[in-house]
Amino acid sequence: MTNTRVTIAEIAREAGVSEATVSKVLNGRTEVAPATRARVQDLLDARGYERRGTRVEERTGLIDLVISELNTPWSMDVLRGAEQEARRAGAAVVVTSTEGRDDASWVDRVTARRSDGVLLALAPLPAGGARRLTAAGIPFVLVDPVGGFDPAIPTVGVTNWAGALAATEHLIGLGHRRIGVITGPPELVCSQQRVEGYRAALGRAGLPADDALVRYGDFRPGGGAVQARALLDLPEPPTAVFAGSDLQATGVYAEAHRRGLRIPDQLSVVGFDDVALCEWVSPALTTVRQPLMEMARIAIRTVLDPPGTDRPLRIELATSLITRESTTTP
Image 1: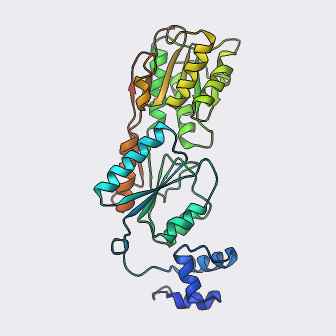
Image 2: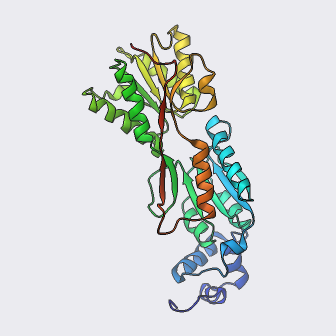
Image 3: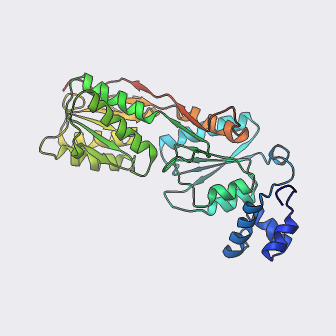
């Protein structure tokens, strides 16, 4: 069968189901028993079934954005970039927020409406999700991917390691020697890379890496405040904190204010993202800028024109340090 085109009828006959059932599996319809769906999907994969026609001919004008949450400035910048680029391409964006749930139901909805592509932003790809999207002929790209990298899956991110290195070296250059870091959830690639960049900067300066100064938060203000409290309660607290997101930095601000500590005179703070609030907090926040809207625009272009052999699957955009008023000498 490797030299001839596999048909739905052949798949149906071998799976012991009707052609209508195979069609439902291909289109992501939900009214198929899980065991039957798995048996049909395995046969489709094993036989290398290919849909007739091309995605260009079948385009629906819909692109799905599946995002971890919507109530953050990070999410809004990603959504704005995606919507702008989709509109330019004559498409519309359908938004799904996972709200931190490990929920695969969005895959059924995406395949049922035959989306032209999927952007998965800071949210996990469900088990079997890549196979099902590929079988349905729906390209997808991960923005700030969760977990490890699959070299076969297109991703768009930023130079997290280099950004964390620049932030920490900035503080070291000001004279700080006890520098705390509050990164995001440990399962996120970006969280891991920011800690690695922080440690690399300490190593370059010949400073010890104290595990007590490394804290994992949730990228939100509350998590930033909780972890800042733990750092400032240490017998030898840090004189500076590098927060893995601007929202976590605002939590550090809140805890410093609660203790009567002046920023930056008694505690220097650096964030990561450079969302709009950085210029409106007091003092204005020194931070690492990542081009969130451009990441989303590139991701939209990637799903509409999937990378071939002449384009990389992994795209990393540069970060840059934006110095404002929240850092000074200790």
